[in-house]
Amino acid sequence: RKRKRALAVTEMETITIEINKLLIHARHGVMDQERIVGNDFRVSARLVYPAGEAIESDKLDGTLNYADACDEIRKVMATPSALLEHVCGRLRTNLLTRFPLIISGSVKVEKLNPPIPGTQMESVAVELSW
Image 1 (cartoon, rainbow, N blue to C red):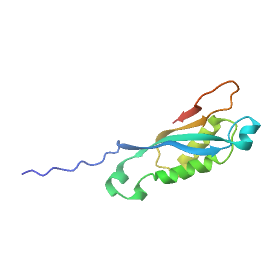
Image 2: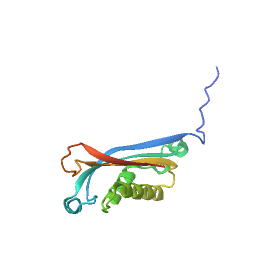
Image 3: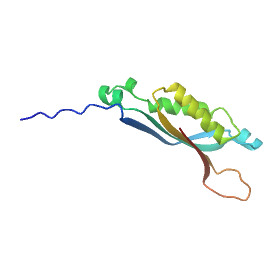
Image 4: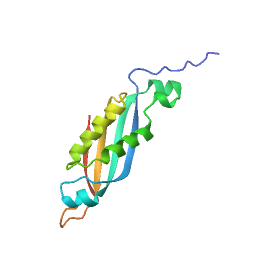
């Protein structure tokens, strides 16, 4: 009987961590009221990194810890910005600095119930991919 050979992880394999709609209250916006009372935001991220160590070792230090990524997102969201585009850029920069394993990804910031006179909508969103 032939034994099945385990497949080795290749350098081309990647893992994608998805953080979906993390709810955060923050003070982003161009209007004074948005900076004073704030608004609710949903932040999503897709972070792609090499699969090797996480698959082979089954140890947390060989992966991208998504709890730590959520903490990083909360930290960035705590600093007000006028534009959601700027928030996305800061999220990208901080995530890439904190997690050098990341090879590509995206971040999406949704402002819930944006204060646009005469308009009702669930949200507006800005997404940055790299």
